[in-house]
Image (cartoon, rainbow, N blue to C red; front, side, top):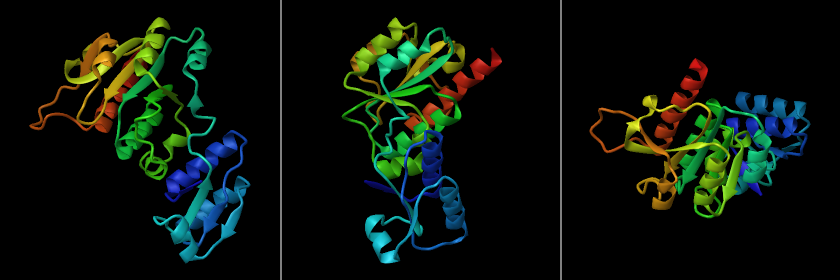
Amino acid sequence: MYYLTGFHAIEEQIKSAKAENRSCGPLLLAKAGPRARETVNLAVSCKVRVERTGAFELDRLAPDNRGIALAVEDIYRDGTNQNLEEFIEGLEARTDVLVLILDEITDPHNYGAILRSCDQFGVDLVISRNRRNAKHAEVLSKTSAGAVSWVPQAETANLVRAAQQLKDAGFWIYGADMEGEPAYKIDLKGRTALVLGGEGTGISRLLREQCDRMAGIPSTGRIDSLNVSVAAGVLLYEAKRQRAAG
């Protein structure tokens, strides 16, 4: 059982539960300020049970609360948990598909920020390793501003095999590397998968070997590279821009 405390995270979890006709909550309320009342009204309209509780008890269950918290069984719910094979089969004749592969992202703040960009730029699927990635539920939900409730995700024990499956399905694989070819010179339309490596480690050797090309972000800064979540936002924006331009 988790307790979400960020207003955006709570509200998006409630909305996604309603959209998928699944249960959610209860919503625990200790202090009904103006912002909390908005969330309570949303919960009531979505038929989520609201329970009054004492501040001491809420602090015990959810220390980082703002007078309100939502109980959830698992933020990685059925609606966003995807099977890669079923995802590929379901594409059928779709040509413009954007996938993000995350290789050892260990900071939940980065992971959450990446998911937020994925939501904004229409990523169809995020693939990550199922053992060694950043998935601290509360931090992730907050930093993604609730995007974790919407962005489709697939977990795998073998990212190299996942990349091979995507290639077999007609995807081009592009690894993010500051020394790579400028992203705006690479065709990011069609069936595209972008690979982002972990903080400080980059893309693992075997996964890098699966990449068709390396995509870079030209910069004039004095430090080595961009934060991985910032790089994700830039690359996803470029892919979205190219697709919009036709």
